[in-house]
Length: 157
Image 1 (cartoon, rainbow, N blue to C red):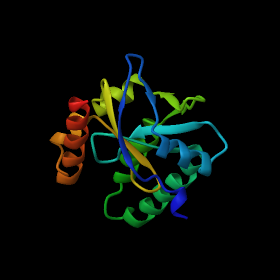
Image 2 (cartoon, one colour):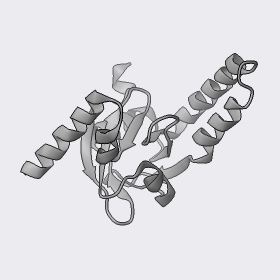
Image 3 (cartoon, rainbow, N blue to C red):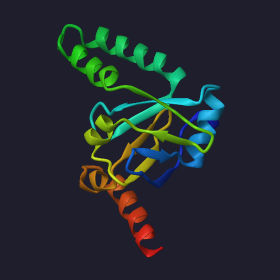
Image 4 (cartoon, rainbow, N blue to C red):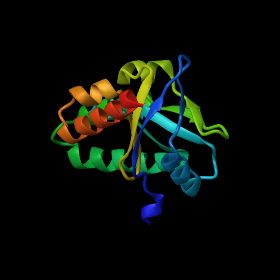
């Protein structure tokens, strides 16, 4: 089952059109999880990054939203609508070409502050796309250390 999880991390270049070549560990997992050469990319629910997954996984995301709505219904009635807008309102489909490249929507790049570099991190069922600067400035020391490491290696090369 672990071979169906997104695991690993890489620093990737992003060109002026928002084109990003997905790292091999992401492409391999996508190939195992779906026959469709596309991903869904959206705004992360909490963090200043993007979250992405294969197109078949959207049903799992929808089921989770329904479950959370039922759990939170009495305590915070408006929370579900706000969450659904963040999850599904910002969701964009991006085709993956034979080279493993995707073109990310300008609005999503702006929201995540991604410019010329993206830190791609597997998080199990999904993967995240971070601006290295946002990762450095965030509240997760491990993520900040990972971003700093990748930037140091890139600068040394």
